[in-house]
Length: 176
Length: 176
Length: 176
Image (cartoon, rainbow over all chains, first blue to last red; front, top):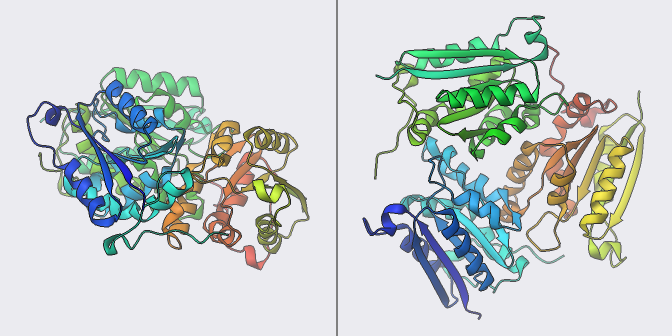
């Protein structure tokens, strides 16, 4: 079984200054730890909502063959929310279905879900997914898209994910 | 309570020539008048489907601190339908959740709802929303997104909206 | 009754090399043949997943007044999947509602539906629609959007489609 690398980038001006503890990054880690059998190599960064900082981090992580990169925070309408815009800029290809489905799922919880511009896309052999900044919205969004992540990683040539019982929703279509 | 400014731009070659009365603009006005307690300053224009005219009007309205700008008309596949394309051009940030949700709501009424490219986005401290041209589709679409509008305006620094009983769906998440 | 022209472009490296028979192109042909009363002029090409080849073919077909052009294949995250990206490049206008609705329909069948970046758009007097590569997913996706296609073609000035009983879902709003 291959080791898989997962990058987590928390965007928060206040958490990056140490004004509070980031709870979203650890929540993403918990979510995947429970579902994957593979040994996971974690790459975790807490940064301010700065486009240049995010851009260089996404580029660096995907250049370093991190197959899955999750961001949390910075997806809203406020001026300093820049995560989806930077994601679109660095990606070779956008996968709009991720954002659509995560908003649809969140909309069943809060009507302000439509304010999130969260998206996902491919850069080289990395899948980049924008998650919301609120810790409790992370599992909601991932539940909506998780099942498609491992097959997506197969298709772009990233290491293969293997699942625990909790990851049994993950779906790989049969080869034609 | 602050005064709020709302811009309404009707795009219609025929209405702008006076060939019929615009019903969509007044419908937007009725919708917000019923839901807001604030004094509202209205800015209403009926223009032909001309990209340059729309672009300068959107720019001018947002430069003049109009917090909410609703367009009606020009969202379809016909060659002169240019509203969403111009909206994307002038906005600093697109909020795709608005278009997705308005299409989903409209699709329950007519299968041709998927032909609308309507979108929404932020320019400076203004939220710009594209509404359909048909008067009766306006309330349908606004019902799908209205609840998120006031919080969006809070986030971009526009004046705060206060609600009547009819506007009680409006939702502001608690501060973290 | 006018003759309508329909273009079908199958994108598949393997099918284009003759390694297997294309089943998706014929499935698209079957779908429309059953629903249209018009005489149909078919334009059918099987090509490798090459952006330049697709770009010139889409351009040529729409320059030649083919009102409806359906692609099949090349909509996923893999590096050689380039269909939606080329479609966006050649189109004058994107109609995001098609992709949204086709993904939503497919998602009820497989969770990996969110991996498809399929879209649709207008180039001159042609509607271009990206369909998935799997033959059995084609009718699923077309069932979700078919009803809006004829009216879309009316709006862009393409020849008028007339329907058989099987095409009775097709919807044209009444003129205002």
